[in-house]
Length: 222
Image (cartoon, rainbow, N blue to C red; front, side, top):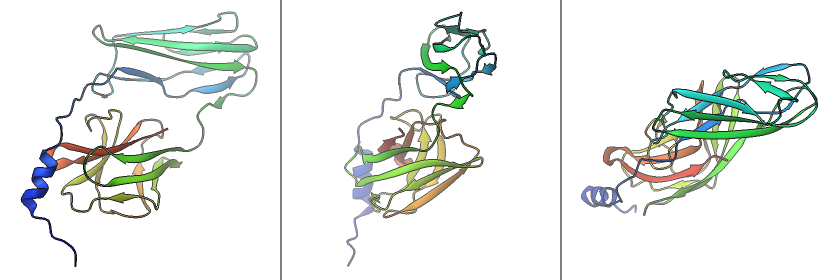
């Protein structure tokens, strides 16, 4: 016989979690990285800036630079022109005045342009609370749809009320994230199909006790 847990105890357990700290380190990403570029071709780099709560923000200042202007030039809009063979690093620095971030990628000028980060992404869900939450997952793309396949080793506590799952860039909060919806499967393999979301847009699968605003666990997307 399934044990019935009084609702008051469930609320107490959920509310009793630590208060969340939403702030994270600002981050800029090159969203269309490459591993190679052909001589005498151009390539338009694009970026995403995430502020100190993981929300996409438009910076007031953007600076693109190249490690070797004899091999590659790049303008303030991120348009690169390949000149000669060799390894080169492209960097971007962004600022809002109060927040700033930078990142870079290194690639070779030689052959046809190809994506550096092709293929699937994956991760492991772990609990950050007293509730059971675990399992592996894989992200892939099907046309314009993002597919999240949760592995058969997945388990979640079905006594927790209002458990929701999100995609987010903030490991502490769903702020600025994408709400996938309420958790309806608590054991075994299942799948989420998310329209028009890029595979590199988010870095965390995030589980959240929505009625009481408490994090239950997450999985970093590698």
